[in-house]
Length: 183
Image (tube, rainbow, N blue to C red; front, side, top):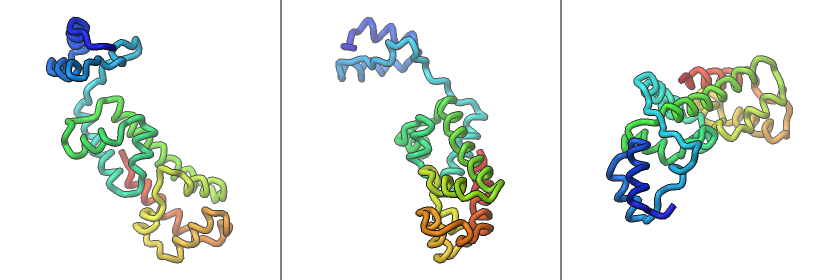
């Protein structure tokens, strides 16, 4: 919407925004449309428990087992905001963002555990093809060698069957990774 001083003041008081925001809107000559939507709610600040979970999320992402951009996209959190919060440029995620990130990491953890409940070619290929998981760091940290990487890669591409890979090693690597993804 086109900038209007009265509307801007009304929105700032309604959503308890920083009064300095009015200068930004005035310089852009525009008030963001999201404030006029009936669905818009001001993000709820993270509680102390959310801040603890936030640190666990950072720890899980620092393992190098997950693709940050995919996790953020699935959770609906901008990657730039994630990086800003991690660097300390922004104080914290909102409670909704913490919950969404935790939910996505937990989904991946459960996917890993469920994949190895039964020795299933289809389930293992689906896990290896997941865009959110980085396979090589998981295998490397689990003690796999170059030959194991190659066999898993060939299995993923459907060149070889499940019997050609060291299934127990792959299982151990992924279960170990799942344990490190605790949020």
